[in-house]
Length: 102
Image (tube, rainbow, N blue to C red; front, side, top):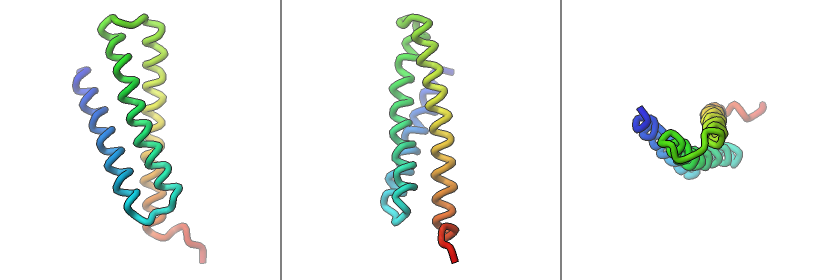
């Protein structure tokens, strides 16, 4: 199960960076591009937090430190989800020209 979790995290990392690079090539507003970039950076942080969490599960870290890392891992995961949904909504609104006032 741990390795499946690692593969899912790797998939999120690849998707976040692919999405950022694709949006960066458009003429989307800078705010959408910055949100997408933040999501990609958070995905790298998430992978980096995963290594100490894995080491804790293998008994190489103190449990109290591991708990803090796991909580931070969860917080970053929730931030990635919210940033990705925000990017999707904002890009869709921009594409449909909903930002333009008449």
